[in-house]
Length: 160
Image (cartoon, rainbow, N blue to C red; front, side, top):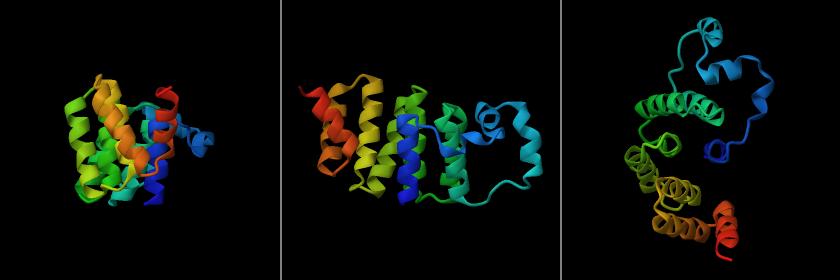
């Protein structure tokens, strides 16, 4: 579970991963054909949800949310109870401006883990993107009450 939270935070904050030194990653994230020979050499596609989740988190970090949605969807197909994949797919949908899909996915993650402050924080960020500041504030407050430090910082900064 801790690994899911780390990946989700990276995606929300657009932090880069420590894997930037690997030369194939930027091409893979951008969907470039330069990554295809390496993909073929890597063998068959992964069959576990966590591998697809990690791929989705990686490409989302590079801003390729369309590919991330596909990877998170594969993770969900393999493990429908992977709340991190539901959440992360929702955030990627939000980045693409597909708000109904974003809220559907994030709400599914929240239903699975209602005490996860990160999920409320992420949904609040998507509400901000969609222009619904009132619902965003409600979720920031809920996330802060659950101990999410980013939500607490956001509220402190934006209520002065």
